[in-house]
Image 1 (tube, rainbow, N blue to C red):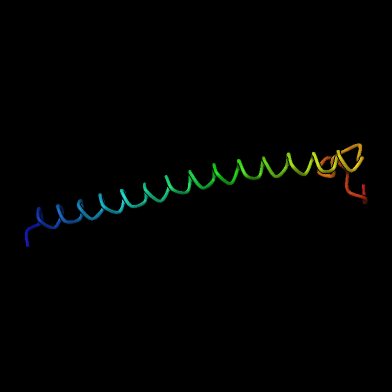
Image 2: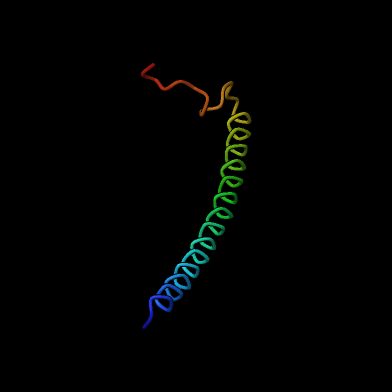
Length: 67
């Protein structure tokens, strides 16, 4: 096998690996965006629940008891 053939095979392999990794990163980006929206919605829901319970300050904004 010639050096050129070996290099072409290596380039083809690296191209495929790069495309696969790009797909993984794109999928992870979509998942992170979805989870970020979900955490925001959950935080809003919890803040509303705490406000409805008569709390003056949302639990997430309160200082821990050891402060």
